[in-house]
Length: 388
Image 1 (spheres, rainbow, N blue to C red):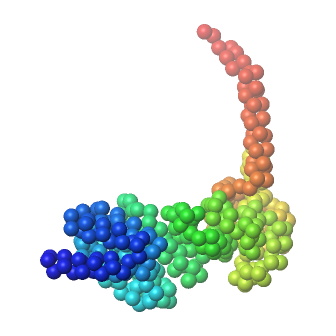
Image 2: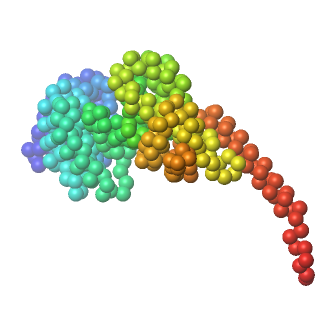
Image 3: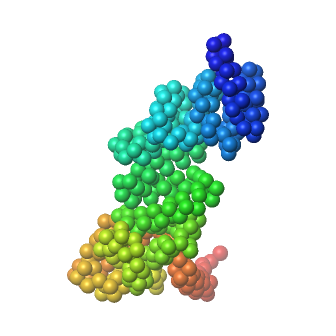
């Protein structure tokens, strides 16, 4: 213990002599708190130091020569957070891996699961930057297993996991999982303060593209309502934001207009056939929404009407409806003889202003019909012929 204390004294004395005036009071406080074994206050002071704009050149040495001497006496999640912050000062990815791996071996998942997840998620992100997709996926899977076993987790831990998971699926061009994990990541942070304007724009762009190209994504509600999408306003990618709203409303005419700009986003141009099928499915959903429930009962929709609304040849309508049924976008049956679709349910989604106005008209119509029924019932002498 005396040897460790002497080593700490030597380091702090040397660091105090090299530090700029803005940091010297902190080094002096380090010595006082360490001598008094006030570990919580020392943790707070170290975090203040790591957040100081002048501390960058001193962070790695502080962690290795000072913090590691009492790391077992402080909250392990706070220790892991320190390690993650310090790693941002290391330019060599190999050295970053070394520091994180070494720290991970000293933080046990059984006793400190959140700290373990934070470090493992950060390690996975470094591996991703190296191009080690297999290693990244293995670490992501391990984190997910631990997360599933916990009742609650701090937001920063969840954010680290969802961030690396989203970035991994982005590298793999798996749009559905990227979309899901990226939105979960945003739910764990404050994009306005935790992301730069450039990062917000990049995240919004990637989410919009994933929503459009995801084979299982036909409900854009969460993204359309998220403030991150406003980052596209006034940017070269604003037209992609407009395209999302066009898809949500199933407007094929506006889709064809915006499709002329697909050459500005090559990934969309490459997938033009899929996007045409997707807008037809969205148009089908909109057609069902507009017609379902009129006159107070289910009404079949003819293949001809669907063909007109989706701008497809009539002999392709059956395949389109079957596709929508298989994706669980609608529920119902097909009458191939009479060439009609009987739709009983359509997937809930976020409505635009025009769609809300249409819904309001239908609700008013329903209210009027209900009033007529009420008046009819009131006009009948239901107790005629009944004696007391």
